[in-house]
Image 1 (cartoon, rainbow, N blue to C red):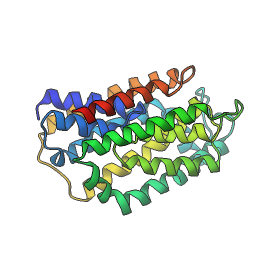
Image 2 (spheres, helix red, strand yellow):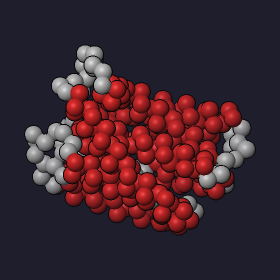
Image 3 (cartoon, rainbow, N blue to C red):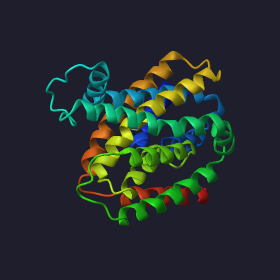
Length: 269
């Protein structure tokens, strides 16, 4: 793998991690099309995911600052915080993130290896998931939402967490699954996306640690890891900003059509 390829894959990761089109699915497809040895790139993929984790931490730093201060029992300074009304709201948000992360941990421990074995080298299986989840996008957009429902509660945290566990399957999309789950529960798009990204931080971190702890480390040149990491972080921040603004006035339909088109191309090739 060249440095240019590592940067390209980093940019691809940053874009597809946050757009609801499946980062793992795209990485598998593109790595295959580039002629790279997919099984030897797991540790490189971890570097890409750490880049997108950095993007979440930087973009939503006020939320994470509020959570940290609430856990330490300290006063939150006025920083135009999204949830500045109450420290208790940040504590609840932290609890909801923890609760929402549990299903992904359970799924990863018990089914991670099986999912990886089935999908890692099966582009048609990835294409099938791209297609099926696209249909869920259309259904979610038709589901009625309460305009006043702008905060995540316990039920939303649990069900969104369960949806996130299915994102272990390449082609599903973590952001797509969690945002769709939020829409089905009546959340508006913006709040569904915000909780999706906040919930993604521990999930992405945990997936990286799990991969490294399982001994999947390659001898890839450090410059390739660094190039992928930085390009994923920068593109990730830009895409989060784009999507948060896009969802204020637009739905998921455009991403659904893209997923369908890509799945058809994969099946044809």
